[in-house]
Image (cartoon, rainbow, N blue to C red; front, top):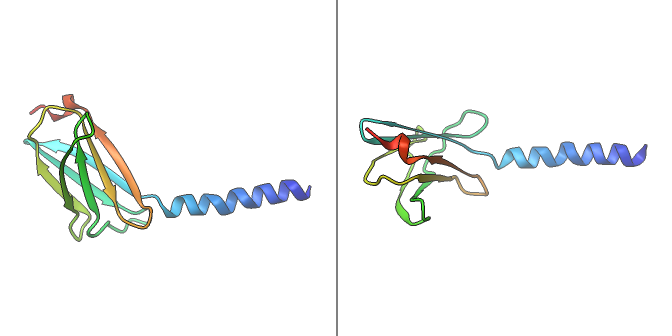
Length: 105
Protein backbone atom coordinates (compact mmCIF):
# COMPACT_ATOMS: atom_id res chain seq x y z
CA UNK A 1 0.00 0.00 0.00
CA UNK A 2 2.88 2.37 0.82
CA UNK A 3 4.40 1.78 -2.60
CA UNK A 4 1.13 2.45 -4.35
CA UNK A 5 0.68 5.72 -2.49
CA UNK A 6 4.26 6.77 -3.31
CA UNK A 7 3.75 5.88 -6.98
CA UNK A 8 0.51 7.88 -7.22
CA UNK A 9 2.10 10.84 -5.46
CA UNK A 10 5.12 10.73 -7.78
CA UNK A 11 2.85 10.67 -10.85
CA UNK A 12 0.81 13.63 -9.64
CA UNK A 13 3.87 15.71 -8.81
CA UNK A 14 5.69 14.93 -12.05
CA UNK A 15 2.65 15.74 -14.20
CA UNK A 16 2.64 19.28 -12.83
CA UNK A 17 6.25 19.68 -13.86
CA UNK A 18 5.48 18.49 -17.38
CA UNK A 19 2.59 20.93 -17.74
CA UNK A 20 4.73 23.78 -16.48
CA UNK A 21 6.92 23.51 -19.59
CA UNK A 22 4.11 23.32 -22.10
CA UNK A 23 3.50 26.06 -24.63
CA UNK A 24 0.99 26.01 -27.48
CA UNK A 25 1.51 27.01 -31.08
CA UNK A 26 -1.02 27.12 -33.90
CA UNK A 27 -0.27 28.08 -37.49
CA UNK A 28 -2.42 28.63 -40.56
CA UNK A 29 -1.99 29.98 -44.08
CA UNK A 30 -3.95 32.77 -45.74
CA UNK A 31 -3.12 34.75 -48.88
CA UNK A 32 0.52 33.62 -49.06
CA UNK A 33 1.26 34.37 -45.40
CA UNK A 34 1.78 31.99 -42.49
CA UNK A 35 0.17 33.22 -39.27
CA UNK A 36 1.27 31.84 -35.89
CA UNK A 37 -0.40 32.17 -32.51
CA UNK A 38 1.40 31.12 -29.32
CA UNK A 39 0.25 30.95 -25.71
CA UNK A 40 0.80 29.20 -22.40
CA UNK A 41 -1.74 26.68 -21.00
CA UNK A 42 -3.27 29.39 -18.80
CA UNK A 43 -4.07 31.48 -21.90
CA UNK A 44 -1.31 34.09 -21.50
CA UNK A 45 0.32 34.97 -24.83
CA UNK A 46 3.99 34.21 -25.35
CA UNK A 47 5.51 37.70 -25.48
CA UNK A 48 8.88 37.91 -27.21
CA UNK A 49 9.13 34.16 -27.79
CA UNK A 50 11.63 33.06 -30.41
CA UNK A 51 10.15 31.60 -33.59
CA UNK A 52 12.37 29.38 -35.74
CA UNK A 53 11.20 28.21 -39.18
CA UNK A 54 12.86 25.16 -40.74
CA UNK A 55 12.37 23.54 -44.13
CA UNK A 56 11.95 19.80 -44.73
CA UNK A 57 15.73 19.26 -44.52
CA UNK A 58 15.93 21.15 -41.18
CA UNK A 59 17.60 24.18 -42.77
CA UNK A 60 16.79 27.36 -40.88
CA UNK A 61 14.78 29.66 -43.14
CA UNK A 62 14.08 32.49 -40.71
CA UNK A 63 13.79 33.49 -37.10
CA UNK A 64 11.79 36.15 -35.33
CA UNK A 65 10.01 37.11 -32.12
CA UNK A 66 6.35 37.00 -31.19
CA UNK A 67 4.64 40.29 -30.40
CA UNK A 68 2.90 41.20 -27.13
CA UNK A 69 -0.16 39.20 -28.22
CA UNK A 70 1.91 36.07 -28.93
CA UNK A 71 1.54 36.48 -32.69
CA UNK A 72 4.05 36.14 -35.53
CA UNK A 73 3.61 35.99 -39.30
CA UNK A 74 5.76 35.68 -42.40
CA UNK A 75 5.42 35.44 -46.18
CA UNK A 76 5.81 32.01 -47.75
CA UNK A 77 8.86 31.77 -50.00
CA UNK A 78 9.18 27.99 -50.31
CA UNK A 79 7.13 25.00 -51.36
CA UNK A 80 8.55 22.65 -48.74
CA UNK A 81 7.12 21.28 -45.52
CA UNK A 82 7.78 23.80 -42.75
CA UNK A 83 8.52 23.14 -39.09
CA UNK A 84 7.69 26.15 -36.93
CA UNK A 85 9.21 26.12 -33.45
CA UNK A 86 8.30 28.37 -30.53
CA UNK A 87 10.95 28.74 -27.84
CA UNK A 88 9.47 30.67 -24.93
CA UNK A 89 12.59 30.13 -22.75
CA UNK A 90 13.01 28.18 -19.51
CA UNK A 91 12.17 24.87 -21.24
CA UNK A 92 8.91 26.07 -22.81
CA UNK A 93 9.22 24.79 -26.37
CA UNK A 94 6.88 23.29 -28.95
CA UNK A 95 6.59 22.95 -32.71
CA UNK A 96 4.10 22.46 -35.50
CA UNK A 97 4.54 21.14 -39.03
CA UNK A 98 2.81 22.69 -42.02
CA UNK A 99 2.79 20.34 -44.99
CA UNK A 100 3.68 21.82 -48.37
CA UNK A 101 0.14 21.09 -49.56
CA UNK A 102 -1.13 23.49 -46.89
CA UNK A 103 1.10 26.23 -48.29
CA UNK A 104 -0.56 26.33 -51.72
CA UNK A 105 -2.39 29.57 -52.47
